[in-house]
Amino acid sequence: MTPSERPAGGGLGRLVAAAVAFALVAPAALVALPLALLLAFTPLGNRGAVVFTGIAAGYSAWWLLGPGELPDQLLRAALVLSATLFVALTLRTRLTFTHRAVAALAAAMAGCSVLLRMLGSSWSELSWWVANRTGLAARDLTGMLWSRIPLDTASESGSGTLAQFEASLGTMVQIAAEFFPAITALQLVAGMALAAAIYQRVAPRPQGVPLGRFRDLRFSEHLGWALAIPLVVVLVPKLAAFKAVAANTLVVAGALYALRGAAVVAYGVLALGGSGFFLWAFWIVIFILLLPIVLGGAILLGVLDGGLDLRRRWSRATSE
Image 1 (cartoon, rainbow, N blue to C red):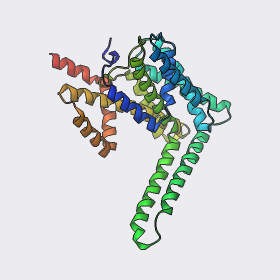
Image 2 (cartoon, rainbow, N blue to C red):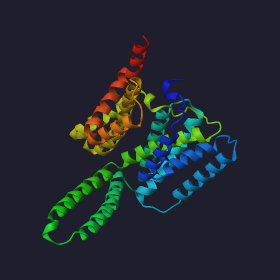
Image 3 (cartoon, helix red, strand yellow):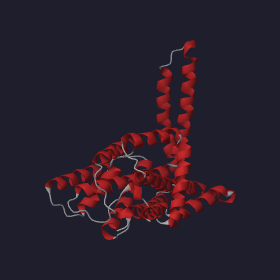
Image 4 (cartoon, rainbow, N blue to C red):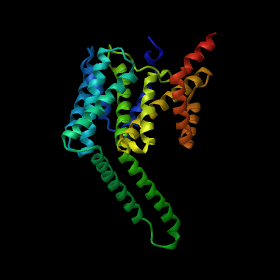
């Protein structure tokens, strides 16, 4: 069993906090459906597990059958495709979580591309839908805020601040539209990770390779091509037709390498004896204040770890 395959123990509080945080930024069905499928194909030895499976399955069915616009329907299709393949790979293979998730994600994106073509639509039209919907919500919010500003000279500073906030919302709407596939992909991966973690706790006899500890996160160095090729496409003007796809792929690959870099940092902090709530709170504050620098450094560290396997080298040097 490799380090990334070791079952995770403890951490119930972190799991609950992660579930609550996920529900605030993404539909809970992205966790409920893969969890329900995992439990449905696993022998359940107690009534509590059966009830939990029924709740997850019922909520997933309710969410999938609800009405929605093009972005909603595409998200549901991606969820069904990715969850199905992820569960099949979990129950039938010995692949680590990262490889199962990446394979399920690739299949879901390919299936959604085919579905869009069958519907006579495109990724550009999908971006328009996202921009229109999120832009409408942003305009409603700013309109409500503008209506609360009194019409006097004392409100000039407040008007300037609100104008900056409105401009920031416009930028966020544009980013959400252009990178909707990447955002969806990252939400699906997070949902699969959370479902796998809950599955290991709920199922009496869980199957497949466990999620493992975050500090042991690894994946094949071949994933580096998902960084190199899209980066070339984005930088070469003659390949502008593929720029949108390449940019979204670059965001997903960059996020995975940033997580790997963060895992290296977590490994190093624990190896040096650093742990505890206040230490991690300090790192979270640093991450928020220096977000661009931290993300760039994490991606670089993840790429270096992919080629050099820094944690294995550190472990070997420590043992010697």
